[in-house]
Image (cartoon, rainbow, N blue to C red; front, side):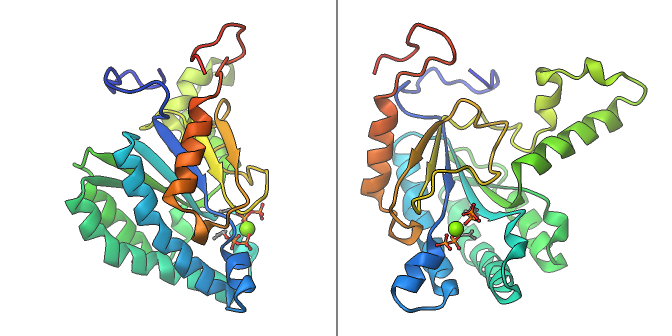
Length: 248
Ligand code: IPE
Ligand code: IPE
Ligand code: MG
């Protein structure tokens, strides 16, 4: 168990406690329909609610979405700006419903690069939903796994002035990582056909099961998600050992 503060006693071992999604394929989805890429992003954003609801139904207490990577700034300015507007719109529209539905929203990533309005909306959304306990939905925005490890090391160092770096071990660093409040993702789902991590939760997904599907994110259905969960349930998770922790 990665997080001793959470009581997992009622949790089914065949269901992941934390599923992280790399929501890829929005651009290709739009291209197939001769639409601008931004239409793909809008359609993709509309899939989120059904998937989060399915997590709740399946008893998954943590869901994390990769919405914008630290490398996505390399995209054309119009696309970056459309993605930022979509994020603003999403926060303005969805937070009230999230709150009513027991969703605690968290945002991880270097948000200091966002404009002031978006930063304020993020802070307000996190504050408004902080008391909710049904599910924790984390949105990774301007997030990179390498950035996360670096910021953790820097913050550890700032808190431990004069202490040798050799004192920093895995347990010491963990509280400084941006998802310290969650157990590590046990299942990472990537849509869009690519079998790569693209600098997502590098530290946290060290032992995650990786599910890659060709389905493009705007087409990612509850049925396809259920297929990922069945695939996960059949896995023999050995964690480097010989014996099976979970009988498949
Ligand atoms: C993923 O879809 C969404 C973001 C990276 C913001 P893409 O925009 O990467 O879609 P493809 O991979 O070009 O189809
Ligand atoms: C990963 O998708 C990032 C997000 C889903 C936010 P990308 O489309 O940016 O990844 P690459 O470029 O194919 O590795
Ligand atoms: Mg992509």
